[in-house]
Amino acid sequence: MNMKTLPDFWFEPLAWIDGQWHPGGETVTVRNPATGEKIAEVSRADAAVVTLAIEGAVKAQRTWREVSAVERGMVLKRTAALLLARKDEFARLLTAEQGKPYSQAAGEVEYAASFFQWFGEEARRVYGRIAAHPEAGREFFIEHKPAGVAGLITPWNFPLAQGAKKVAAALAAGCSAVWKPAELTPLIALAIGPLMRQAGLPDGVLQIVPGRGSVVGALLAEHPAVRVLSLTGSTATGSALMVAAAPGIKRLSLELGGNAPFIVLPDADLDFVAEQLMRLKLFVSGQVCVTANRVFVHADAEAALAEKLAEKIRAARLGNGLAEGIEAGPLIHRQACREIGELVEQAVAAGAEIVAENRSYEGDATLREGSFFPPTLLVGVNEWRPLKAEIPFGGIKHSGIGGEEGLREFLETQVISMPKSILAS
Ligand code: ADP
Image (cartoon, protein in one colour):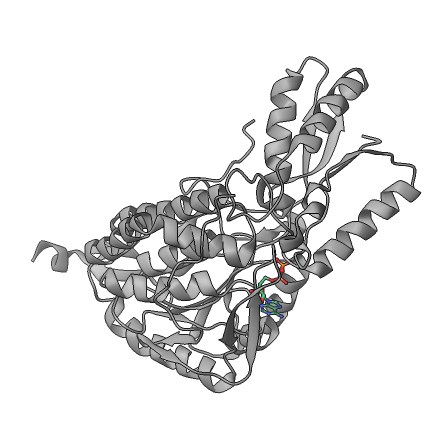
């Protein structure tokens, strides 16, 4: 079988601070979830390292906010171009540490680049306005200023794209940022540090600190210089971060878990539905916050759809995402397999029937240490992937707050009451 190899990358498994690699305290092993093989031993940022990163970001912010919006945008657009030029290497690393098939990883690299491109373009479109003043001879100038240092916390399902979305928006707004990637997938984030330096980003504007969520999150929340906290993660983590950020009255952008229904009406084209639903469920092995969590099928369509889905599940090509033609990889770790196994057991105990499953990976000895779970069709019973840089991405209730307007999350609005005579002069 034609197997892609890990790229020789140009990063160290250390924190990226002020344009240099910085060792921390203890380390954590990053493994390939398909094979269990060790990829790297990454140093976890401790309190001293995180503080150093924040202090460097404070310093860098003073000059970055003064860089013209056009130049800030150019750095981001150059990052997009560099990322696309190295798409293959980034995709291979992403597959190795996250598990998703190479084709999906390559798609994520393009998606990440689209954020750098989009926010690179948006940087110069932060318009203020002039409003009427109740006193004659004066005007209000309403401007949007960079909020300060941003703390960015990202998950492991889209380790590159989620980071790109936050980093690009924060930097476009004129903020500097401290990025804490997920512990399971820090390598792709670390690779962005030197890439952005190559794109012309001044040192210190983007600091990357792998580490424990609770430790680094708390330090970011506590430090008075960090003014915005942007998290994509679980609802429990969002709630914990909100509590930690409350004393400092920090701005929060929380993109948390989703719970999307997928509704099939009786007159639907069932071949199209089956194809879309399977792509959606196999995409990142179902580990996507906007995936379909529940499928509601009209009784008249149920039997025919179940048959089509069963056929597709049995035929899906599972395995190591670095191998050619793979449609679904492993779950992120063994614990996730145990949790999904429990959900299946509960559903069966509650009366659901296992209609189809696919254990084809079991014959491959190289995957024995991987964290695979059979795609399983149980069921008592638009476009498949609404992910684009251009669209708002928000949530209701427990799915989070903020996030929907990208750049605005990182800007403060300032009003200046100004005599008209200054305008005329
Ligand atoms: P998931 O279910 O996607 O793993 P988590 O919320 O556990 O979601 O993780 C998302 C990100 O939040 C990761 O980078 C993780 O390290 C970080 N994180 C976990 N706990 C905390 C916390 N208490 N404060 C801040 N960040 C945290």
